[in-house]
Length: 182
Image 1: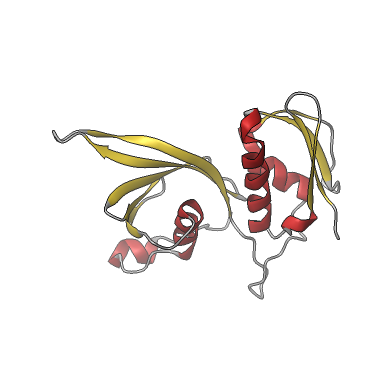
Image 2: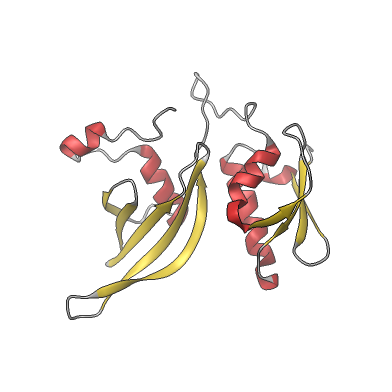
C-alpha cells in the first residue's frame, strides 16, 4: 500500500507540514485562518483565533479518513475536555502520474459508500459500474440539507461534479444518490 503521508522529513525537523494534513484541516475549518501546532497519526492540534482545537482521525482507508473536530475547553484548574463540534470523512484525491485527479479507477457507488460509511443502515444490490445507489441512511430529518451537502462536497473532492449528483428520497431514511452527467 502506498504511503498516504510521508512523515519522515517532518518528524526530523518539523519544518514542513505535509500537504495532505493541511488539506484535511482546510476542509474541516473551511478557510486557512488556522495554525497547525502539531500532529501525529491520530490527532492534529490546531490554534485558531486564540482557541485550541483537536482533529481526531479514525478509520483510515485507501480512499480517506473519518475525523471528528473537538474544541478544547480549559477548566482553569489544569484539567479540561474536548467539546465535539462536528465530524466528517476526508477523501484523499487520487492522482495519476501527471498529477491530475483520476476518477476513472473509482466507481461512483463505491465513493458514496466510502463517504457515508457507518451511516448506511442498508442498501440495495449494486455493481461497481452502476451510477446510482439506493440506501437507508441514518440522519435526522432536519439535517436533510446537511447530508446532501456532505455527500456533494465529499464526491466533489473525489473528482465528481456536484451539478451531476442527484438525490431522490423515499419512505423513512431511504435515499437514492445518482450520477447524471449533464
